[in-house]
Length: 413
Image 1: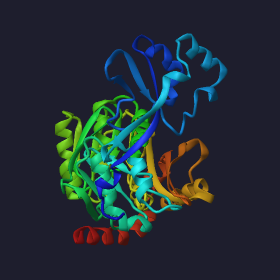
Image 2: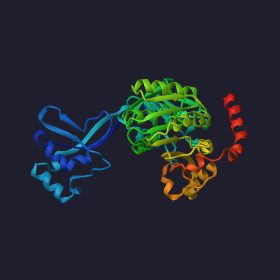
Image 3: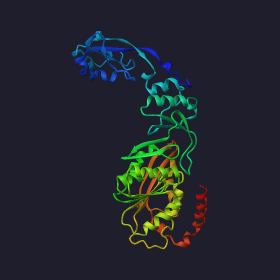
Image 4: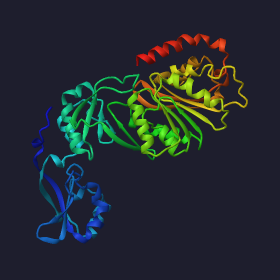
């Protein structure tokens, strides 16, 4: 079935049942609860027609066979309630599409022996799929079933292209429901509103967002280089009372970032619509030169490219004598191969900084999630070596052409 035909799920079914006194229903559940028939919009405990003193329990024919197959102690419990083999019979049910669970429907219509529709992301009223090739002929059916079976879902989309590394959005195809992409998500005691078709949002990163927020000391300072719609910035300001500088190159992300600042009523957030390097080089030095005493954190969540932007820290405070030393912790993300993920991540960061990182400068190295069987998303949190920030101007000249190239690329964007 590649086109959903709900009438095909109409059927008559015979299931085991047991009639017991109404007053004994609660007591019998210690035995029967695990055997009850569980189907949507079908009550497993029903009235017995013409007898107000009894109730009928519908049992799952796969789980329950006969009374004498129960454990002896369960048989004893039922015997004490005057429940014997004469209380059991078969009941005929009229079942329709609305009675079947989503998983049962998919098992009935999708190809046998191949992975079914086992995972999806929910973003407010939107379900986001990334279907494998063998499921594409069934994509619209899958979309309709998800709209039917998941409460509050109005739109189902399938990813139809890779994520664009510049603006971090991707092309999507509407499989079922409305083409309504403006949605709201609640996370870490904050509300985020955005157009899912124009910005990057990954519900699977909720735990990582929470981890970072917990790492931030109260009233610290956060520079969020690739802020998106604010999953780090907004709770940092609202929950941890941080002063936040939040930036994103994507104009749509920047729009919704400002909207989420307003929506969550946070006042200690400054927003920017700049290239990541430009943001670091233009916005950080003026603040750092005020000699802040608060801990400073920098989040760089753009796994495909973030490490490459670390060179913006080289010579950032060239010629400045850091006394006392600034406490700056960088949280940078990257994709790495599974077999060498941890060593690869550290090597990438050191190469970008042109400077080694001592063990005591590493706060933590975290395997955030599996992107694919051999590809992992990692985060390295480290205290940036002061020598990187104060590298002499003559050592920094080699990066001038790179900054010029960046300016031209930014204009093109």
